[in-house]
Figure: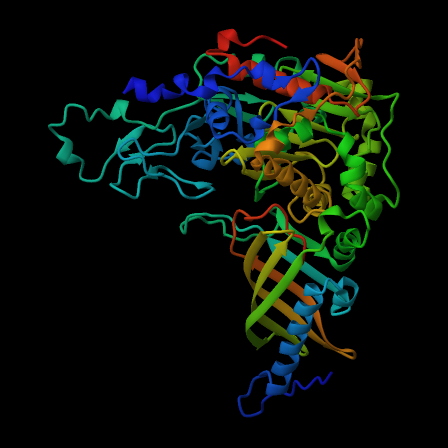
Amino acid sequence: MSVNTLESPAAGARQASLQLFHDVQQLLYKDARLLDEQRYDDWFELMTEDFRFWVPVPQSRYRRDSKGIYEHGRMAHFDDSLTELKLRASRWKEATAWSEDPPTRHVHYVTNIEVEPTETAGEWLVRSVVISLRNRNEDEENWLGARREDLVRETSAGLKLAGRKVFVTQSVLMAKNFNTFL
Amino acid sequence: MADILQASQTSPAADLDYHRLVDVDNGWIDRRIFWDEGIYQLELERIFARCWAFVGHESQFADPGDFVTTYIGQDAVIAAKDRHGNVNVFLNSCSHRGNRVCFAEAGNTRRFTCNFHGWAFGLDGGLLGAHEEEHYANCATFDKSKLGLHRARVGIYKGLVFATFDAEAPSLDAYLGDYRYYLDVLLDNDAGGTEFIEGNVKSRLGCNWKFAAENFVGDAYHAGWTHASAAAAIFKKDVKVNVERSYQANVNGHGTEFGLDLIGNAMGLAEPEVVEYLKENEARFAERLGKLRSRMVGGMSSSNVFPNLAYLTGFNTWRTWTPKGPHEIELHTWVLVNKDMPERLKEAYRRGVSRTFSPTGMFESDDGENWEHCTRSNAGVVTRRQKLHYGLGMDSRIEHEEFPGAIHKVQLNDANQRAFYQRWADLMSAASWAEVPER
């Protein structure tokens, strides 16, 4: 994978080149496809070892409230290291994971991609929108939309995801479970 | 007016024989109780509008003005701490046109002002004033002292805040009765008391609320099979129940199934520090709880306080099954920790519970699947005629020198579930609290 992240001398600040944008976009599409195909081991290969995955539960609070909709330290859907995510996914590989058999049919739809520089050279803030569509058994269907902020790092092995924050819109998850990642 | 309000008294559901629908003596349950709209409406009246409902933990009300919104049955309520330090619980529905007066799930405020006409209510639910109140100058029925939001009785047990709308209900202490012995396992194992970690996880399940409640009140049996994949991933082996040293205990429909293994549930968190904490503090727990109960603090167990508050020792998840109709619930889950626990341990519980007992969790995702389809299958009229088997452990009752309540040997048992449904039938059959027997 090409890692073309040359600073733009004309603008005087680092900007994502078209090539980098393309590479980031391909990374996010691959990420989504691997989740759709439930290839979790391959999905984990997209992450750096220090990857953090945070999916807070939004709270419905008044605008005047000093506390925010999303805050660290609260109960979260996910607040995991890569090792912990692997532990979660390992359950899905068991033949006794009854609620995964027959398998859920997944679509992860990724759009609204923006690539912005960070303070650190070789690291990019990538914003996107993801929509998870799940269909199970005969007629069970669940949608979940979210805004995402990824930290994408240039490594010798190409672009990797070094962190992901997922801001879902549902305060009450309108489903019995959430059996994928975002 | 009164006739309309009392309509349910003449509804067909009020005339059903609930002790036949749940035949606890023989261990059979009629599936209509999981499906029928009329029965559900009567549950809202005779179970949820009567019993003590969990509304929050005192730690959620640290400062005056702190509030949460929640539900008692399908009645939306606000729980708010006033300037005197009392937690008040009242309906979240304006006394003018009935609009919801608070849309935030939590926060801090001085008043709750209705969006519709600006009627403003205080932290005790009292009507403080209204927009352009002068229009009411000559309105004889505009008596602010009588137009407050309808209040519930509030009771607190070791940090847990409960409320009931029934003036005749027994006191909270009497309602919990001897079950307090078991509640203390988590609520009183440390001198510093407990708190909730901030926030909770909320989800919707397409199931009857009783399938969730009965699962926690006494279904140790499902754990080894339903949760085999989570156990294999976390423990790398099957989990077996100790047949000699495990029990079910129930009091008035509240129930717990438990082993005396100290760490059985806690191991499931996959947070080694939590297991170490339990082992290191076993003697300290025993000073407060006695030797036997100290072995329950993180042990293999599940529990449900009638009707719809459940918890797991070891995981320290607390949850409510709030009905949203006969075939839907909203599940709220919190994490309870000892206040004086080191921060990194609280963090281990917070993240561990998310990984195990939340909608994304390794254990919980299989439960929802079961409960939904136990409910949905009853859409079939022929299916609905087939009674369900609750006959495990019919002769398992024992006397125990220490444990209060009705005790059954071996936690793999339907005894607590039968006791839960007996209490349910008692309440569904009773026209008033005076008719409800002690069990």
